[in-house]
Each structure stands twice: as structure tokens, then as C-alpha cells.
Image (cartoon, rainbow, N blue to C red; front, side, top):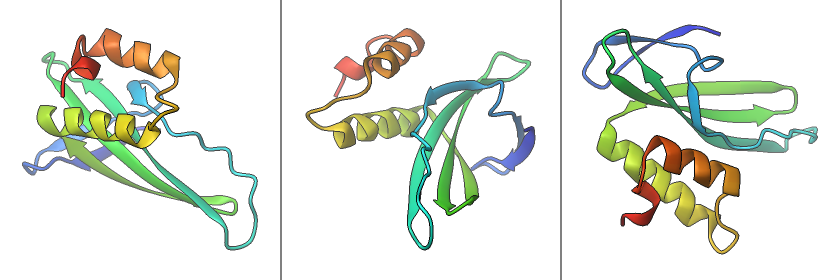
Amino acid sequence: MKKTIRTADGTWLDINPETDVNVIRQPRTITRTGIDFAHGEDLYLMTDTHGVRHYYVISWVAEGRSTKESYRTLNEEQKDQFIHEQVRKAGKIGLDPDTADHIETLFPGLLKRK
């Protein structure tokens, strides 16, 4: 599912959530019906042909059988804030160990920084 999105500085970025590196993905188990809905945000890493890393978030809302998505790009600092916010939201349960390991592999030491 290739898409072209506009970055914060106004340039265009070609993304593909199916092949770009998924950093954090919210579960999308939707079994509800009627007016119930689920929502989440997924963080992706895309490296362009020049080796520059780009981060983007897909915010989604699922209502019944349909899902609406919006996209936004993040800079390095915003990416770090997003990850720390997800850790904070996970609370005492914490991030899934596989997700935490994945983040540590991609961004060594990030989870230990405040």
C-alpha cells in the first residue's frame, strides 16, 4: 500500500507501511459492532535512497468494518517523544518485550534515556 505524504517542511515522501520498518504497532483486533470503535497510532521508519531516516505515524480509527487513517511525519525528537509516550501509556504492564527489544535494536539506549 504505497502512499505519498507531505512532510512538515512541505516536501513529499513516498512511504509503504507494508515494507517500511514498523517500530510500534497498536493491536487492531476489531470484533465490535455498531457504534463501538477502536483507535491507535503506529510508528514507522523509512530510509530513503540517500540513507536518510524518516519517521511517520499512522493514526487510525476503526468503526465496525471500516477504518479511517491519517498520516504525519516526525523528526528525531518527536520520534523519541512518541516512543516515550507509548512507554508511559503502557504503565506497569510495560511494552511487549518483543516491541521493547525491537526499539532497543533500532535505537540503542533510547528506552533508558529520559
